[in-house]
Image (cartoon, rainbow, N blue to C red; front, top):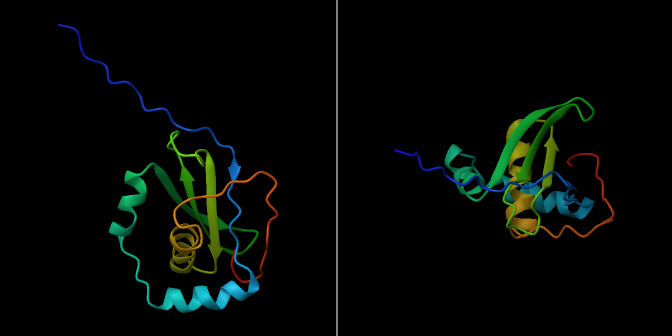
Length: 124
């Protein structure tokens, strides 16, 4: 009897980074938003179920934690792009990543080429 083979899901190849950085004025808005937020493992489930890969690592350059959200679903317009956030601690980095994805971008990444990068010294 022949085994049925499941067709592999097409995954996106890395294309670059989605630049969604806080302006100086955004920092206070983020900090006020973050106070009311709690992070639970179940908060990651919808992201994983919708084709995102989530990772965390120590960022030597910024001397803090980097959190990244990579879109693996080839059906999305922003497939292959990564959204990052960094902060002094993992909890703040995760909250900032969620803030950028859910609040700033409204879960839709505008990945216009040659988008200027905005930087700020406290968060990124």
